[in-house]
Each structure stands twice: as C-alpha cells, then as structure tokens.
Length: 532
Picture 1 (cartoon, rainbow, N blue to C red):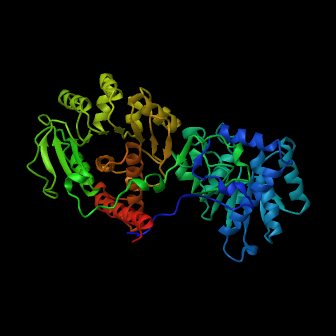
Picture 2 (picture 1 turned 90 degrees about the horizontal axis):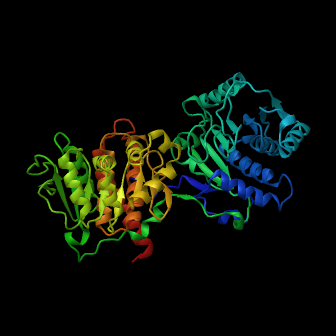
Picture 3 (picture 1 turned 30 degrees about the vertical axis):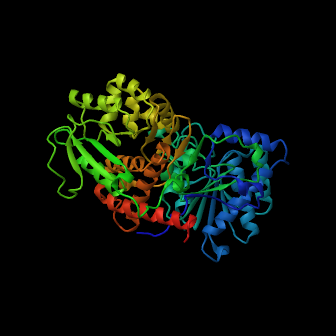
C-alpha cells in the first residue's frame, strides 16, 4: 500500500500566465459559463490572443509528452472546423518553431472557418507546415506517430460526429501512441460526459486532455473518465473577475481532511459512535455483513447488524459484530445504515418507517431507496427530518426516486443528484464513474477516485458502511459523504496498483485496505498540523 497521498488527476499547466495560475483547476464550469467568460475577455484583448495562448500551452504540453530528442518526433495534428482547429494550426507553427516537423490534417473548408482560424491556416501555409487531406488511412499508416493532437471539435459540438469523420475518430482510437485532446475529446459533451449522439455517436479516446479557461464536469463523470485521460487546465491568463461562480468542484481529500482526528489515548469505544446496519432479508444476509465489516474497519466504536430474517448468533469472521433482530430492534441512538439486503416486503417497509421516524443520523442504500421510490409517504417522512441523512443511489435507483429513467439521469448527473438532494433533504451520493456528491444547499462535487474494479457485487454495501462509520465519528454529513466516496475509490485505485483487480476484485477486499488508507490519511494530516 502506498504511504503517500495520490497526485490529483487535474492540475494547472503553465502558459506564461499570471492570474491564471491563481485560478482553481478543480472548479467546474458549464459550456454556457465558458462562453460568457470568452465573450467578456475577447472584448478587451486583440483578436487571436486567446488562440495564441491556447496554442502555446498546448505546444508546451505536447513537447512534454514526446521522448527526447523531440525534433525527430512524428506529430500529427487533426484540425477541425472552428477555433478548435485554429488552436491546432497555431500549435503546429509553434512546434515547427521548436524544431519539429509536424503534419496537420485539415478537416475543414477554409472558406467557412472563423476569422481567427483562417488566419491560423494562412500562417501555417506561409511557414511551410505539411498539410494533408482528411484520411483515416493516413492516420493508421504508413507513419508510426509519436503523438496525435485532437483538434477536431471543441465544446460547441451539439450533434453526433458523422460521415467520413467517424472512421477518422476510430482510426485515432486504434493508435497506441499518446493522444492529446484540445479542450475536450472530440465527440464528448463537456457538460454531462456523454458521447454526443449516444449509442450512435463516437468520441476520441485521449490519453491527455488540455482544457482551456476552466475545467469542465464532462471530463470527470459518466463516459468522460474513459475518454479524457489525464486532465490539465490552461487558464489562458484570463482575469479572475471574468469568472462566475463554478457550478461544481472536483473532489479531493482537502475537502474533508480537517475533520479527521487522530485518536486520543484517553478514549474508549463510546468515543467513536455506534452504527446499526439494517437489512438481511431471506437470502441476502451477505449485504449487511459487508456494510457492518466496513463500518467496523473504518472506525465505528460498536457495530450492530440487524437482520430482517433469521439473525445468526454471530459473524464467524468478525465476532465483534453484534447480530440483532431488525423487527424487534429500537432505533434510539447511533447511526443507522438501512437498506443492504433489506428487500421490499411489507415487513421491510415497517422497519424502514420506524427508522425514518427516529432521530438517528441515517445512511439509506439499496432496498431502502427502492422502498422510498415505491412508497412516496416515506420520502415525505425523510424530507421532514432534522437529523442528518445520506442517500447512496446508483443511476437506476436515482431514476426510480425521481420518477424518471436511467437515460435521463445519466444525461445530466449533476442536476439529477442536486434535485434528489433537495427533494429528500439529504446529502446524495449518485454512484457511477465520477460519483456526484450533492447537498440540499446546492453544492456539488465530482469524486475523482475509483476505477472499474468497483463494478462488483457488494461494493455499494461497503461504501454505505464507510459512510455510517464516518458519520458515527462526528463528521458532518456532507464531509462524511465526500470522505467515504473518496476513500472507497482510492482504496480500489491502490489495490489495482498492487495487481488486485480491476478484474476479479471482490468487495470484501476493499475493507481492510480502506482501514489502512484511512489511518495513513489521518496520521499524515495530524503530522502536518501537529508535527510533535
């Protein structure tokens, strides 16, 4: 296991900028916001300035991706219509100035290009840049490219890539060299992370994305993680006063670290709270056991596992878990995690109703969410509570709660999570690639950790148990959700680095590894703030 914090997936990149280096690269802006920032900036700077700045940042990043000596590198830039293609053309000129001999595939009618892009093409022609016609075959062979730059389409794309360009994108995706996308991988929606056109669409799969002005949510959620690769932000020296408040932020451990406390010698099990996991209908006893083990390993002082049917005498692997009958249990103290393996029977409804009528902090997962969607009176109970509550739906569960469908949820994950948080008066973790953490006050965070190893039965039960443990240790509800989601994903990342997955990793393997990372994180934070 690593003994240090991971590097962020996103960072600023130097572009000769002054104020841009002060801009938060984790702030996430919609396409509409970026357009507003562009318009406000273009009115006060000479024409072509932003394109020059973008190209300079991109050329710098391209050079960093090439093996020395870069002068012999074979670089292909694919320049599409619009200013994204203009960025690629100016970038090619800068690479030529640096001693390279780039090739530009021009995929646009010069007569229909914006003025800045037309000037960029004229300059490329004037300095002798090699320009070639669009051709998937020219991408595939005869040259073994060292780097391909995707400047085909930017954030303005609203319809699926079509015609011969589909084959061109597929040819780029078949390459094994680094692929650098400018602003956004062509074909990806910058707001929602969907491939434009859905199942009929295609998008570039980049190894690196240099996004301009501000970071975009679509790079970090939904299909964005599969297409964007490593993301860096070039602020283009835009004054911070041009930026409106960000809609969302990219998560990091810094959002919750201050709430982690190193344990005092003078403490006891009561110092770290109780967690009661409620679930375990017939044939589903494993789910609450996984949640309970996760809660215990993540620091809850005592953990009770309440089964709807046939509670065992004890957990053979972890006898410290206390097994109870959920039907007879009173919910007066501690944190309740309800739903793992609970089922949707009348008996399950009755137990969940009593849970919602309690004053306990709650984590509602799995079948608790299904019961809420089937019985809207339970949502009313939930929304009227004053104690903290957290919901952990996957997209289908969220769709049921919103009386929508999975496609609509995935088409705007940020809005879906935010709407659900406000309707239920709860912090919501909308699970998936780039899980969304939404609070009733409208705050939104996209979690950057995790990988496909988590696509396995029981990993959601483990997350619910982690949430319960952190709530029990007095983390505020939003910070507990941020911490648990980050820890859950980071544990999977660490295990994959060790060769445990992504194929075949089981949910139970997350639990002891999460304990180790949580302890490392807490210790490192304590040493920073109290080094004695």
